[in-house]
Length: 77
Image 1 (cartoon, helix red, strand yellow):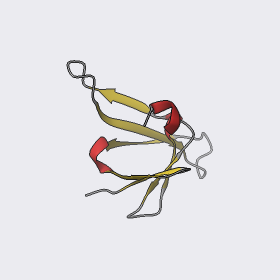
Image 2 (image 1 turned 90 degrees about the horizontal axis):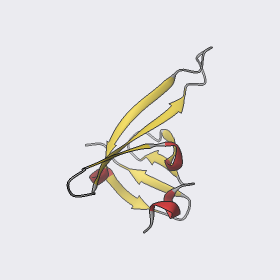
Image 3 (image 1 turned 135 degrees about the vertical axis):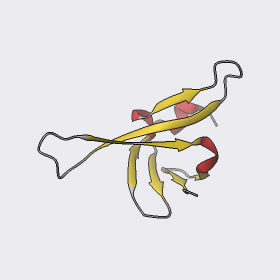
Image 4 (image 1 turned 90 degrees about the vertical axis):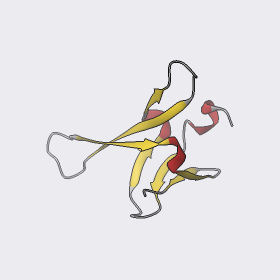
């Protein structure tokens, strides 16, 4: 699958049901030597904050359990 195909997919944590945002809004952490994606950092705006603080969460690539037609399911160990 191409990264461009994942761009508009929502990221959902299957353990908590938390929506971590849209994959296209994430920062990718890439191994410079191999070119592999090690992890991504999701950032979602907190709806309870007056200043809309960003909650950032790093997710390792191996925590992705399923990539569906409209969402990416992750699982935290």
